[in-house]
Amino acid sequence: MKQLVFICLICLLFACSNSKYDTIIKNGLVYDGNGEAPYKADLAIKNDTIAFIGDLSKESATNVIDAKGMAITPGFINMLSWAPNSLIIDGNSQGDIRQGVTLEVFGEGGSMGPLNAKMKKSMEEDQTGPDRIPIGWNTLGEYMHFMEKRGISCNIASYVGATTIRENIIGEDNRAPTAAELESMKGLVKQAMEEGALGVGSSLIYPPAFFAKTDELIELCKAAAPYGGGYISHMRSEGNNFIEAVNELITIAKEAKVHGEIYHLKAGGVNNWPKMDSVIKLVEAARAAGIDIAANMYTYTAGATGMTASMPPSLQDGGFGKLWLRLQDPKIRAEMIKAMKTDAKDWENLYYGTGSPSKVLLLGFRRDSLSKYAGKTLAEVAKMRNTTAEDCAIDLIIQDSSRVGVAYFLMSEENIKKQIVLPWVSFGSDAESASTDPVFMKQSTHPRAYGNFARVIGHYVNEEKVMTVEKAINKLSKVAATSLHIQKRGELKVGNYADVLVFDPSKIKDHATFEKPRQYATGMSHVWVNGVQVLKEGEHTNAKPGRFVKGPGAKM
Image 1 (cartoon, rainbow, N blue to C red):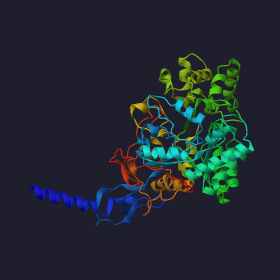
Image 2: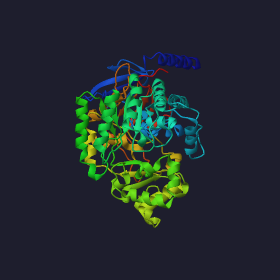
Image 3: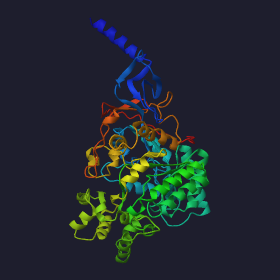
Image 4: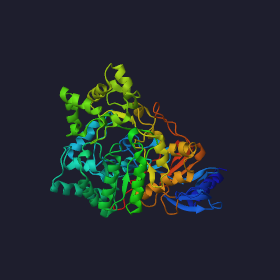
């Protein structure tokens, strides 16, 4: 009897090892990512690749998933991810994996390389908590390979940050590079492109990025162009100078002959909401003229950044340390308070744009003693501390020795609905990808960190009916992959990498709110990354098959 059982086990193992496919997903509706109506088919995965799409009723596999009544789609792409640090802490990327995000794209102005000794020291000092990670890498490529080796559930890709390039060569001073410095900066861009960067990313409202002129950015993008790189930007303005900022981005893309992408497309401040129509016309005119322009967005009326975004960049010359000292000078403090209450035309005053301190939500602090204020508005905290909102903001920055994370309520829901249906718009969370473990729960965050992608389908497709499921999936996958100029991802196609989702679109829902942001989205059933299942029946498998997805010009 024992011998018979043993023989049966051997036969079973032999049969499994000789299966034609590793996984078969059967009876599902295939949304291939191209925006067309779905069709009923089975999908097979072998190793890291989509091996077959069609009728697999007579085939076997080691793993068989019955997707009856569910969608089979490409993995989603997060065009603006701030997960480089959260993935070091926890490589499972749960906040985004549970929404179907299989690729995180970094590089909004700042990137994880190239670093010099001073930058590395600053990055190490900026870490909080007991589990500090030594900065053992120097270049962007070295960081990406470090993450791949460390183990991550999602794929990762990155632009090289124009801010990082500038800081590496010039520092944080308000001046133009010399001719020699500009050549060094271009050399760093070329190195990053050969390592696999997607192009150059900028964030032009923040110093020291604010100090870069248009011609400097054109030259950096020209260095990326021969490698197929693009230019992606948090533009110089999303408010008073919104239209001028879009024109600058179009000029850079045209002059450098690269793809141009607008980070988190939005019109900030009630007086600027009507400008969205003009911006859409500008982009579509540029596209019609043969200039490759696109955009991404998040699905909320509030953005999130630092409290220092309510202060003039001219007073931040030299970096945060210099600003911190200046804020303690009574004369400069008075100037700062006056500036915060001014509708500035030459810089982006996010505080003024909200119209009220009651529309500035405090998200996070470095000091535990201040964490009691997280989740409260600036108006509420100012009242608790018996001071003005402007004084309160400055005091919190000084006491926390940080820029202080806040959410600014600036945007219009009408514009979100207008933008979300544009065929050239994809999606980015502009946030970390974290879990609900205690290490992350100490700080508040923006709900987009846990709900941005689920909200596209759950809210804007199912509830608001602004577009179809197939169009939403197209924008969450193929449109993004096309903008990134990456191959074999973003579409269900034989030979492509098996980044695959299975879910019921009618059950996708985001639960994160500004009051309770750290809540997972629900409805995603199964997720594969490079052919390995990382989400099964809605639960994480702890698998970490994520890879460094390189740009088209990679040589390393």
